[in-house]
Structure formats: structure tokens, C-alpha cells
Length: 134
Image 1 (cartoon, helix red, strand yellow):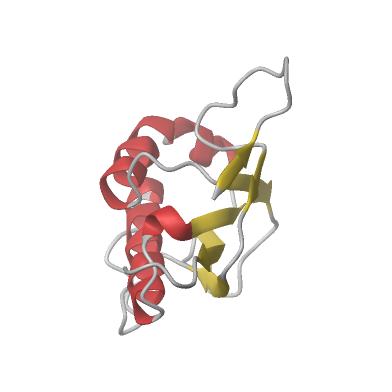
Image 2: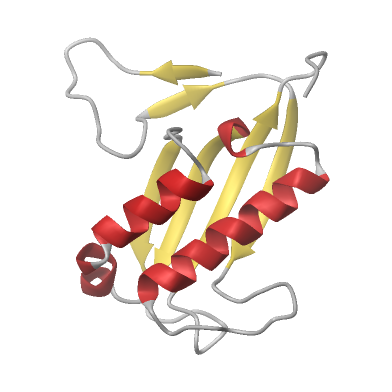
């Protein structure tokens, strides 16, 4: 995987401007803050992010992919201010679950998510290099 950083640009914090890779593409649909049984255990924004990230890692594992294979993430948040206020807790959860890997990311505030209790939905595209032992 190659991080794309144009010369002279400031390094982004917590994401990459672009990523290039080749291999087997894995697409993970939007994951929200409920568990595998569809049960929410918290209404806390950072807590829902933590669960969504755990869900992403579980789906990736089904393709023999790991967090470091993630090329891009799109975050849909219902409340931008709640998202910004939870940066520190989100960062802690992200580093614990995803690690020190920062793919291309976009965060968008939306009016609502399909599940009324959901505060965040995260979708992922990953690339698993073929021919490399996992």
C-alpha cells in the first residue's frame, strides 16, 4: 500500500490524502454501533464508534484482511459537534482497534441514519495484497 502525499503539502492528522494499492478488494458496508446481534449497548458517541470499528475488523477477518489493509473509510455522523467533542475518545478507540494506520478518510454530517439510535456509520474499502501470506 502506498500513501499518496503531494510534495509540499502539510501532513494530515489521523488520515491520509490518498492511498494506492493492488490486490483483492474488500468492501465493508456501513457499520454502526450495535453488536453482531443488532443490539446497542450505549448511546455514547465514542462507544458507538468503538463498536462500529470492532464490527469492521470482524467483517474484514472474514476476508482474511486486517485493519492495515483498509484503504479508505467514510464516516457518516448525525451530529458534527458530538463527533468533534469525542475526538480524544475516538482516537483512543481507533488506535486500540485499527492501530497506527491512517487510510484516506472522509467524514460527513447527515440528517439521520436508517437506525434511529445510531450516531455514526462507517464504511470501509480494504485491499488485501494477493500472493502475500497473511
